[in-house]
Length: 505
Image (tube, rainbow, N blue to C red; front, side, top):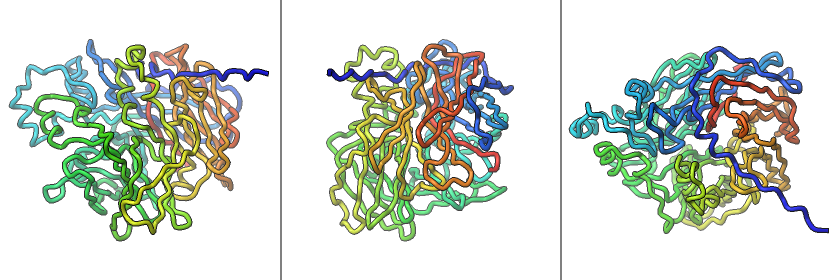
């Protein structure tokens, strides 16, 4: 009997191009299907581009859209939805001019006749006056406070109930140029992140600790734990995330590097940040382990790969394990240009640009520096936006991770996927015309098993753009428990990352 062909799907990239024209300040109550677990009480806040247009001008890259916060509040079996734009200086300036006047990652601003070339030269001494503060990637808790952030050295304190922007903080004195959009939270509440800083006239990767405080400001107490020599002194590598284990910080130095000299030049001649970055396929990717107690460094070599997200990392039996969603090159960045999304047919390799695989690197801790480490394939699927049972298993041995099937022309695209690393078993959830966001794990109270909990995922619909849903799935088998459907006053765009805040926080 002939085997039935598997149906292939494409993740709907056009959901990134939607524009929110009306904020939802007063919570909308969702139409509930199924029953929301009685114990589930908290708030999911997500962050991403809210509009790709300002007046008659359009952003060139998905990363550039004005940051929009989304809030799903769950309580007593009811789910509500709100959304508000992050009140950044960039948004204020753009709205006042009714055009894009601040250059972004991939977008060159419209020339401002009030600013001369001499203004831009002088901005070298005040870079934040011309650098975007559009913090539209992630949301994290710092102590009892909630912040929106991205890779630029500006973060915004937000009200987790109203989504009002409360305070703008510049980290330029702590983290120069960039920092990752995914800091790590320790069991004691401390936060760690990795950035780039000028140390004695040389650029270095710096590991920064934000000490936990209940009612204080963790940013004011931030301290550099250690500084690490980058692979190329004037071209530090781009990092969106990093790993942390019981004894090590895990830095992946991929050959996707930024030019310090070009950053200065680009401020003067008004070129986007992306033009400071270059992919060097002739170089290997390197994994740098930094001892958290002594600062000792050891480098290891791997075949060339590009990554955005570390799944998890941990130590076991004399080895350090790091799992990542790996691409063969950095073309996924090109795949998120607006022109590429609108005109995929003009880019014959577009499908390949989106291909990634979850891979594992096992480093013997007694191996000498520069030992070559080979990759192990965790699953032959395209998966991104990985999440785990973070509170209990970050930096520790784990068995399961969850993500979205984001490939083009794949049987797993548009799916929420659960990967069992031990057995290789895959479980999926898919809804026709549905495009899920990263599935965020929420443990059941007093849970004993790693996957005892639910997944929360915001769903956008290809067949209706003024709607969003929140689905609640059983994390064990990915069976749908319930969902809340919302009809919104304007389009709901796709977003990148979020965080769940239980009411007991």
